[in-house]
Amino acid sequence: MIQRRPTRQITLGPVKIGGGAPISVQSMIKTDTSDLTATLNQVRRLAAAGCEIVRIAVKAEREAETLRAIVAGSPIPVVADIHFDHRLAIASVKAGVAGLRINPGNIGSESKTREVVAACKDAGIPIRIGVNAGSLEKRLLAKHGGATPKAMVESALDHVSILERMGFQDIKLSLKAADVPRTVEAYREASNRVDYPLHLGITEAGTFFSGTVVSSVGLGILLAEGIGDTIRVSLTADPVDEVRVGFEILRALGLREPGIRIVSCPTCGRLESDKLLEVVEELERSLASLRGPLHLAVMGCSVNGPGEAKEADLGVVAAPRGEWHIYRSGHFLGKVQQADVARVVLELVSSKDR
Ligand code: SF4
Image (cartoon, rainbow, N blue to C red; front, top):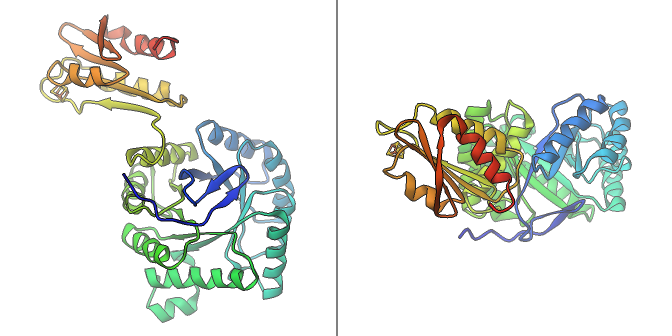
């Protein structure tokens, strides 16, 4: 059982972050923010996949105007991601966002930062200080000899102290680098220094394959140590994949309720079917939109197959002569032909007496 480190709690719309709340999964919109239709479509696809918070880049005044309609049409809280321009931050707050991601030291003079903080206080919304190893202050790069974890933490704490001096503590932090060791060290250090909730992520993690591996290792280490209150898996891929991977990481550690869990054998020389991979992939695709909980086993022969299948809610085991044996809740249900196995499983999943 993972003991989570205690943090303060903030809220983004209806979603609580920190203070023992479930670790939330978020993603970032990849469409042009000024394209309302495309952006809202992506927001809704993410929400349907279980995404709990969505972040949207706001780069220009016209996008801040579109943001109001996006917020109104979004089923989940919207966070505006702002760099450099405090007017965009204020316009986004007026558009009704649930939170801002800014770096207070990067949006202009102290008086401009005060304006943003006042707007957030009035609206009762939090600010995420999002430190990224790729855009650290030159002063800190020189002091620490590069974008080291210590430099990242010092940057984050500098931004925190700007907000704290203004009496603002509705804060969460992220300290992202593109590699696991720096990211892990930076978050560990930050977690030792402050009790603000932490948004975990590895930035620019890579494609679906490499980004999933890197994020799973990096976030997995931190989460297993009890660090982290909300996560975003960054992938050069469909953002829905970011959400799927995010939940899988949390479920693997027992940090979120079970969803659709498909146990499948890796196959070996005892395999009784040449279609096992196709069956697993079809089931994974077809069940992706379901929330679960559902434990499904797809096994290749009678050595380990029946045992795994009986432990699952539903299990299928390849047998000789193109047959598959079906198990439900620990009991043998019958035999089906290979061509029918995926269809029969899907029918059983959707039947009420599963
Ligand atoms: Fe091999 Fe059978 Fe185990 Fe699959 S279930 S890995 S086919 S022994």
